[in-house]
Length: 172
Image (tube, rainbow, N blue to C red; front, side, top):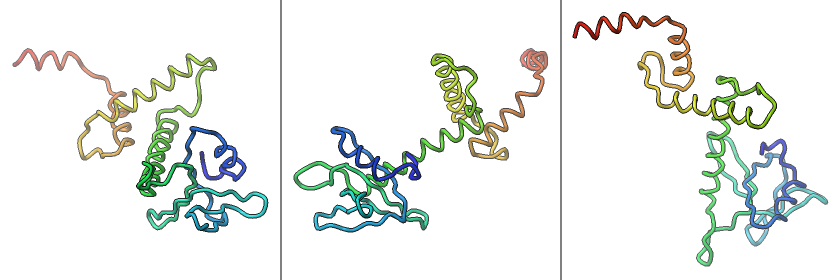
């Protein structure tokens, strides 16, 4: 859930649901007030909610995460602040995957409208992505996934002479 969509009303609804955990980034301009129990009062006025907030810095940017995961202590096996930051960073790897699928493997436009065809299109893009991950290209061509895709696209357009390959095999 992007931080633009994470309002305090939604956090309140999520906190009421049992057996469901969340880690959400909130905007840096939302007011925080630290409480005695190490939780924070998030927001102002009628929209205030009490919640656990994890604040960390990455690449000179401050991240504020609201979560209902239990705090690690001697009594219970909870989740440390570092682990929550790691969970959030891993979530972004998923976002980068979807961005690549949509931008470069053309998943931004669904070809069909029925559920089965949409599933086939998504799985095809994921399989293409995994093939790119396994593909080894010359270092001069680059090292990123986009470099691999461009390299593969360039050579897919060339005509391949199977006669040439057979001639080389016969000479051995």
